[in-house]
Length: 155
Image (cartoon, rainbow, N blue to C red; front, side, top):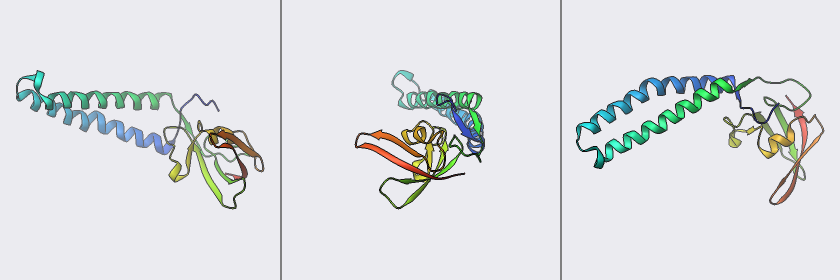
């Protein structure tokens, strides 16, 4: 898969769609109400409430645009059941020199959450794992040196 493309799961797509609808309806309305209230306070040049509401409006519109672009241009990933690691794969690995095994789900950068075992396809480990098969060694360099993971299984 192309590392420059954005990948999202079906669950993330639905989550983003819900967030977008909420922003376009509820959040926009809240900000417009805050702007109207701030305008009623008078002199806009020194009106902190007005400037804060405008700043929030800008951030909201930026996030809406970002989500719309992501939804339009992302590739929806599905769970893979192949012999090679790819976006959507769940991989069990063992770090060189350690006994513990770790399980990672390869996802797009929008969903990456290391604490829950979701790593980005663009992360050093994600890129090192892609295209590898069970039993292969995935290695990458870090400031502390080279790290190697053996692929135990791929789901």
